[in-house]
Image 1 (spheres, helix red, strand yellow):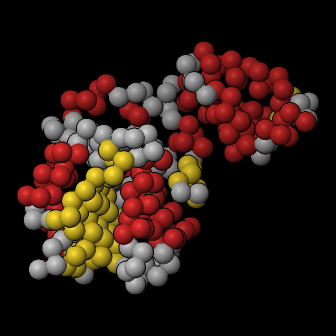
Image 2 (cartoon, rainbow, N blue to C red; image 1 turned 90 degrees about the vertical axis):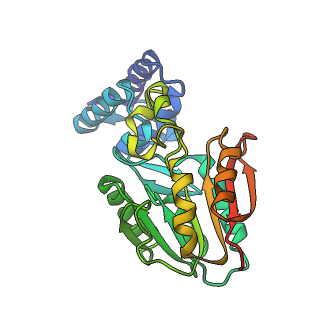
Length: 282
């Protein structure tokens, strides 16, 4: 048996030496997830003992974190829009910036009864499933090409919105026969291929398939609008998450695809983050 206070001090030092900036925050989350010991309980009962099994599991996870694996993969979950989504190696980690895409989509769909919505490059499903949770009357389709990511997406679908439909498919090769959509939403890969090598060590553990937007980072913004415009209703919404420096290029591609009412909205850091456009009514 090992006391939680002594273990905590040793583990905290390990994380700090490994360059983990929020070492205390991360360690508290790991303790709560693995050992069911909250920060409050740790402080109130510092002599509380950890079992050998708990200690061994914590040691394994800390070794993975020291090697740069993201905290979210160690926990097996991450919060998005107030809900916990299952994540792990092979799926993109949900990020707060993506919540802005959901917020704008919900606002745009506010007056649309029983909307039909497709989430392209769905990953964990956090975008489409959040829309489904916030709009229980919505019919939501989740499309993801990666088998690993699709497995997490299906787990999350079963937890949060089992009525949603999941397709494991390449969204650049077809629309799965979907028609009459009120909205097509996507957080596609948008990092230029040459920039992948300069990403932080944690991000490098995430799937390249979910990050690599080809040479200029614009592959999916170039291919999705002309293909998926036909799946939208007249007046239907197409909304993308975009890189902070991609607004002008993405807007031009949306215009070239024949979409209108194009605009860009910012994230909470003041960066361009969401591009929205509409299919013409005629």
